Image (tube, rainbow, N blue to C red; front, side, top):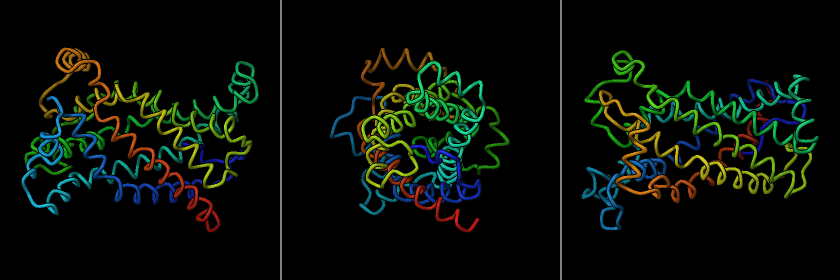
Length: 301
């Protein structure tokens, strides 16, 4: 994902929030069904075959009509909306602030420049700002956990509403937070760093904020594919932990052991292909929309 801030960090905070929030809404409506499919594939512990695909993807609606099948891919939309919009506002608006913080702190900026050089240091600051942003996303973990459970294990809700679940489950909603941090740190580093590297070394852009739509498309695709591939194994572990019943305490080490024993090393990359197919366009879509809306909103606020 290419950085959303210009060299001077000129976008207002309100513009960043509104622009990135609207991009999250649009992304959610279009891409939530594909995300559901990817999560169900990652949660599937049996051998995947084309014959079993229907029941794995559509679960209880495997024999239903096509409209009902398609509608079944929108479970947990309310939780997904809360998570995705908050996540996009935080990620798209937060990374520029972390980047501004690093560049605006002489000790930190000089450390990057002296270690990596002026050009590479600039890219590393963008990547590190992305990594810090990714680590901070752990605060949104409860919404992410509820979204995944609704997508893959709706029986865990047992008719309870979101307030009741928060009251009863408490800290269990942060189950897997360590694996989430371990996934987000390198994933977001690769996302922002891969995009910055592509813009700088492949496309020859000095001021990333002046990139054209096509240049943003190329850079964002490179960053998205790098991020998803790097984070795939840890993402699978996180998903397995989060989709269990609330009362079931699942340790990451146990998930890793059982996964290797029963499914083999390739299971760490279950759902990778559909995720790459959707995440590339998803990030490109939301980034392009955010880049369009943030300056537009900035004219009025």
